[in-house]
Structures are given as C-alpha cells and as structure tokens.
Amino acid sequence: MAVLLREAIGGSLRRARTARRRTLRDVSRRARVSLGYLSEVERGRKEPSSELLAAICEALDISLPDLIAAAAEDMAAALRPQMVVPIGQRHADLRIAGAGNPLVSPQPAAPLAPSARVARVSAAA
Image (cartoon, rainbow, N blue to C red; front, top):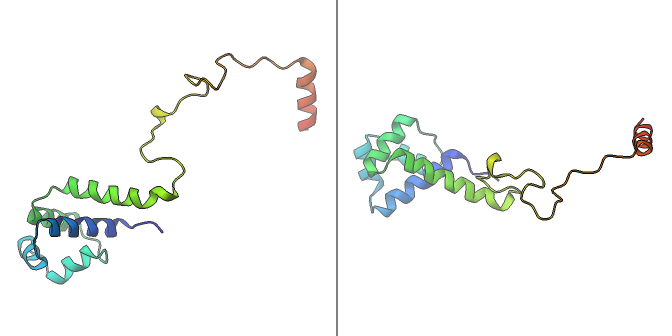
C-alpha cells in the first residue's frame, strides 16, 4: 500500500521534532496551533495547509523545502520494493537502442527481401 503524502509529512515532522528534543506542547505553542491538531498532523490523520506547515517548520527551525524533501524520500523508499523502473531515471538517461550498447549491433538491419515483404503482408491480412 502506498504511503499518503499527509502520512509522510507527519512522520517527517515527528522525526524533526523528536530529533530536536521538543515536545508537542512546545511546538504547538510556538506554531500557534492546538496541541491536538498538531498530534493529528504528526500521525498523518490531518492534512495541514501550507500556512500551517510553514508555521510548524518555523517553530521547529527547519525549512519547508527540507520537510517536503524528507517526506518525498519516505514515500519513495516505501515504493522501492514495488517498482520496476528506479525513481529518478529520466528520459535523458535512457539510451537509444544500440547507441553505446555493445550487445546491440550499431549497423542498421538489412532490408527484407521482396518475397519476405509479400509474405509478411499477406500473413498479417
């Protein structure tokens, strides 16, 4: 099962808070959000607004982009065992068949003989 964004964000917030040895009460006061709501956010039960996330990040002295990056890494790690193609592989990284691949002949395939073309067309019809 895939990890939801709110769960990944909540887990990242909780790890950041506990790494800084801060209590829920302390962070909720600094972020001006209720303790119960902050707890729900950390458990992945509530999806916080961007304004609320910014306030919590400020209270924890972390940047919002760092929080989002940590959540994205958590989501990617949860998906890795299920993936066929690695995350981060871009089209630019893909090689055209034969280009630089020693297993594929760099020469173009020989054209089919006229009789082979007719046989292939009639077999497809």
